[in-house]
Length: 388
Image (cartoon, rainbow, N blue to C red; front, side, top):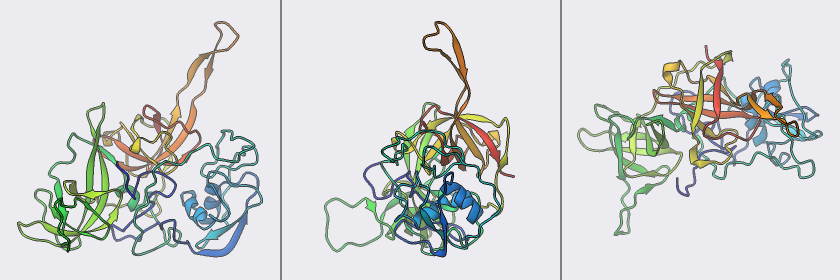
């Protein structure tokens, strides 16, 4: 994508943008404060943001909520240091969870209990570079905090913002973004094709669709064609119908943007999202395996909350909320200085991803934990936790 204000990847990616279901919304943008309880936690050797969220908020995936209200203390959420005092959000209550952590020097990994990579002892900088392009979606107009209510393992916005693999030319019977419905006061020789958030737009509906005021549609652009004969589809925004016409184009307002919403893009109804608030994936052995076939934005080193796409499909029984471990397989290498002597190296964990979208052409993961920075096209993945 071009230079746009809303980009994919990065620690401030969409946890949740506007509600596209009746459930409350989860995330706030980085300019807003999550209410603190007045409680604090002093970081000790072995702590991680992941484990602190697990202990106080009963959900390790809420570690960004702790980071957001401690940016004056935590310069880089990839490392926190013993002795730092962190404010706690929401109704934080110390639980009885047993924390499992691994310390690298005096630095502490933020998002996983077993990070094993070394960082330079002198610099203090994380070795996991943030994505060069960060997507910050528009904030929910309802403004709920992720800690203020029960929530599903995967939030609505994480699914709607996720790119997915589809057939060539994208979904069947798609509608179209026709253009802006705003009447400008200044004449222009070249019609403006790019639209802004909260702007009204004309859309034609997907074939066979009957719509009503309040219905919501996902605008998207087509991405690259992959070697396996599929084509990537990348969401650009959510539009809410304000006026439905019989035979004419309908008028909809752009209520959320993930990229540039432009004339000519496709339009489909938003997915139905129905996950139990208390359902969490359970550990699984010998789960189905796949391979990373796409990394959005061409990110060199995708990091936590970046999307990646696997070649495994819904036919393998994958569901939203399942978790995949990305790994480097066992391999045999020559031992230096030992002639033909060989050693077999064990399988090495790279990252953990949670399924946010599944189609008949692929599975989209959001990275939720990372041990090594080598996530790229060709990386192997295995399902290690399955939703009930």
